[in-house]
Length: 343
Image 1 (cartoon, rainbow, N blue to C red):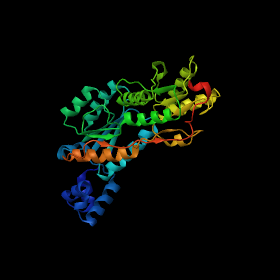
Image 2: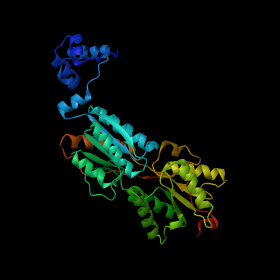
Image 3: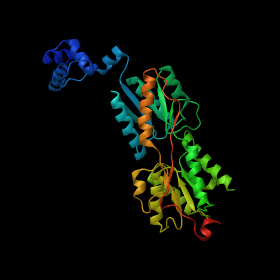
């Protein structure tokens, strides 16, 4: 025999209050007397009562839930942002539903459909390049959404991020100032990812100012993982000509590349300089510590939550929040030595 689920009427009876008072204590606790709230909370704990979210959503037309779809959950930089996003939403009485599409644009539509079936009040997406069907679905459901991590290649006003073009441009300029002329990139696929495209464009712009170019055979598309970095180093180092610096699209790739350098007795930065992107905690722990770009992941999460809450409440919020992503210089970047630099 299945156990009977406690009802709101059971809670009210045990707490010695009316059904309406019990409902208000759970929905708007700041509008009931402290003694009533305490009695209802004790009854909830004793009975193990869980509110019927579907019924509550039908009554209020709100689920008090926000969804966030990330490219992957396998990168600490996203974990940091998720934590900040969730903690800020908690302050508004909202819960966070998290999903990922693992850099497969077609899967993003499937994920969004599943989320909409369950019902959410708003949506956080990463990047500005999404399948048209995803954006159309948000419009059909009148679902407020915020784009994060990027302000590149979009006219959408509700973005919270940074210019990947500018961040990559500043990093490449600094690399050129160190004297590098043979520059390689290890990034992900440009398809469906404006962040990768913008970083390549920013790098090219800085190199062009120095009279240089980004060689097509020195652009490696690899997974944003440790193994992706190892793969890129093998491909670049086994070629007839070698770069003097590799710009990686994530710190994970850069750390994997550094590991492959150790396995091959390639000295960093004497034989090869390496840079990352994100500034995860592990970037400070590598040997040598990693030069990278600091992504404001915590601020992105918090400000995206506040911006989305404004949209859900029918307020316009701020237009396009552009944050800074500075270059953080550590010890994996130095002047190239001898002929290896191609100078």
